[in-house]
Image (cartoon, rainbow, N blue to C red; front, top):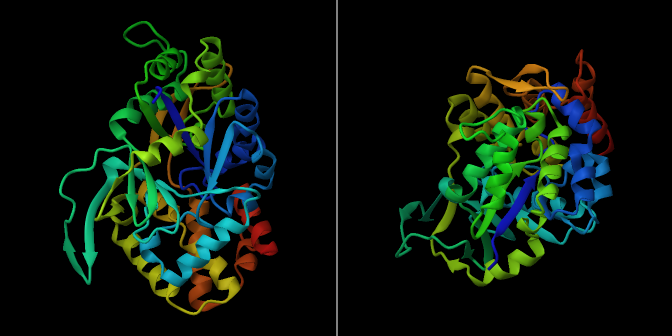
Length: 379
């Protein structure tokens, strides 16, 4: 198989690290999807049903030939905390909303133990074991090193950290300080593209589309510079399309008897998070009305866990540059608005009441909460 990068760019409208100013910018710039589509460079866009409601302009990009959209659940959740019945609703709702998306993939953070569709696998954070009748055992005879696995008839494409991390680290540095020189006299941007040029084999590269709006002051401007450098050096061929890679990798899939389980440490390491998701699990067992299902989709999103985890750490402040070259500081923290909306939705599930009215009563609402109000009003 040819060398190249399968860029899996995930969209998550509830991203726990997107702060209000970042959300407003990414919404205005439409996550840079316009320039990504027009570049012609192949890219896989992993999305959720609710993203098409929070970002109504997503529909405009589904039919671009170089953008392979995949969809999974209605919202980004942790399936292990959901009842089978509620997970089925999440699954069906995730299929119904996005227009014309035929490829259904679970995102890498929530590899399902009873998959209804194919899924992504993050190798360094995935563990294989069997859990039958409450007893843990290990059935596989050897470690799995294949680029794809097969489990209960479904295919998991494996993102290998040893292959993608050097590229991802270079991307994160270049998006902050693209013109800074490294020890070899190369700018960080050129060094990133050097990584793209020297890739060996098929590398599945996971990247949040929100990244330049979280860890950079450039936003879509960074994509313009990055794509420009790719084109200038004629490296478009180093990016592979999902439609050509998936059929080849599925042939190489190695069957696993043990289930692939995602390490959930970031989401569950704090007692507050464990308590929160335990409530989500209990509520998911109930017979829920249509409105309660949507409330649970908001309350049970995975990123409240990520946001709380990030908020307990000191905010990360790093040097960065603005588009005009002026120096600045980019700060990474957990989103208060994601946390607030999730807790409000959970409280509505426990005590009743209208989420819309609670959100409406808040002062100084950012665009995330305004969009959530608009979506909830129309559900």
